[in-house]
Length: 376
Ligand code: ADP
Ligand code: NA
Image (cartoon, rainbow, N blue to C red; front, side, top):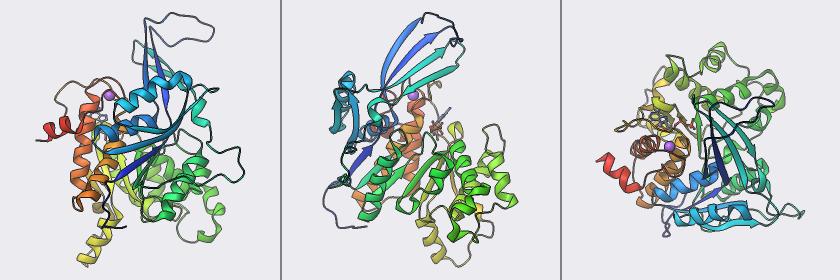
């Protein structure tokens, strides 16, 4: 990675843009039933849009690459107003903007219908020689999984082969086990998962079919040992040993031959905070002291969630707030040429604390100055 760069870091988010429609109901509609909603709230959403918005709120340059229908022009305008460069947001005349129809029941239950709409449009899908994505001037790439995987992969592999673009992937919604096993992990810099997603990854990498689908590495550890099986089974929210199990899970992932040992991993744990593993820090500390820890779990860092100063209101979008603030922190560090991971992560956790104290996904993401105030 070049350290002499003069230009300000610039992030590209290639991802989804949605309109979220919340129907507030006494209960979730039963088959055959018709009920009236007490209110209808319409909000901009989609993980790509949410995360791009968060990067901008964190005070960093961000370009969003995605598609809406003509019914979504207001979303594009809202993003632009929020500081997102929407020059690469295409408005498709004969597509609908991605939609989430959310039934929100009085007892707190949710039920969601998704329509991918314009998010599933592929920019040059009609051409047999589609051009590789344009990453000119881009230093950081942020990806999720609400668009065609082929598009996500073409951006990631371009970033990987450039050798100079830092990439962050938040695999939500989760990929299939087969997609996970064939994912180009070597091109990725950072993976952000929650505890459920970490469990899914481990399961995909340790399933019986895993060792046969990657024959070259059959001998080096794809058959799960009993320890690894325990980890997969124990990753549920109610586990009192969630943090310890997730720590083991991250190390098992790091060592798995389907994965790349160079990928940094962050696991968000809701109200319990985060775990993080930085392979670069790891290699530095190993070379600095010959005595590596006998039991690998110490290598995974833990930080508690930011303290709430107001009542918990809405955790929607907390994960997206985290991802946006995280890549913004990496950008800041690159520009400054100095800075430690832990302070980047503490800023993210503080941003998330403010996010969950407020309603909404995008609307609740705090500005960098509010985060700084809370950190002070
Ligand atoms: P996701 O929505 O992707 O599952 P999480 O629920 O793990 O993401 O939330 C991301 C971050 O937001 C957490 O690491 C934490 O810092 C913060 N957060 C989420 N829920 C809460 C909560 N109930 N109280 C405090 N912080 C929270
Ligand atoms: Na929120």
